[in-house]
Each structure stands twice: as C-alpha cells, then as structure tokens.
Image (cartoon, rainbow, N blue to C red; front, side, top):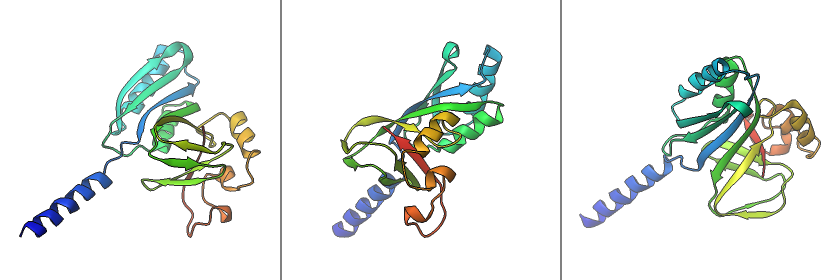
Length: 181
C-alpha cells in the first residue's frame, strides 16, 4: 500500500512539474509607431488580454513595454506580436529574460522547450545556468534591418521563413524562433 501511495505521489509531482512554464520571466518589447499615450493605451489593452502576462510597465518616451510573465503559464512570443500588430503597430525589438537550467549553447543549436524550438544564431559557446536575456531576430519580432543582418550570419534556411526546413532535421514543418544572446 505504501509503495502504491509513493508511486502515485511521484507521478502527480511529475505531472505538476511538467506543466509549469516558469522559464520565461519577463520581456522588453519596443513597439514601432507608438507616438502618444492613446497609442500606448491601445497596445497596453491588447497585451493585457494575453493570459500569460502578469504585469505591464510602459516607457512612453522609448515606446518600450516591459512584460512580466505569470510563472505557471506558457509564454508564446508570436501571440505578443499578433496582439501588437492587431492594435496597428509592429514589434521593433523583443528581448526576453529566460531562466536556463544547465544548457550548453553553441552556434546554430536548436533548443526545444515546452513545444517550441529556439535556434541560437551567432552565439559563442556558453554554459547557461541562470537568467539570460535572449533577443529574438525573426521577421516580425525585430526590425527588418536586424533580421536581414542575422539571416546573413547563418547558413540555415529556417531563419528566412521561421519554420523548420531541411537544415533542421525535423519530420514536420514547425515554428522555430531564432534568438541570440
């Protein structure tokens, strides 16, 4: 009986830990086209509708939104972009703080986390075991100029489309986020 109870307790603990999405902590988003408080309010209202955002601070002078994420919900960067674009603006830069747990990063590493793949572009070999800022360099998550720069820094074709290609060695097409540190 004690063995069954121990196994059940261990199983429940494993289920609970696998459903936690605590690795994204926060993000800073520069929004292009925000020129006044009405623009800022529009973006704020759109972002507030995302269930994984806990708090939003706005720096109107720099058109920058600092987002704090809920620790128990999955963060989807494309949803942030979609909300901003839906409000009539675009993402000029997206930098997120991510809590890494013993990850060795190398150039062109594809890292899978909670159903998403993150492709590290133009990075030196690093061991990450704490919070680090990662910059998204995908089209729509950075400026066109920055995206073009990073397209030239890798031979992987997936950076052009944001979806897996032959270079990624994946069975099906799926979204890949391109990031740098």
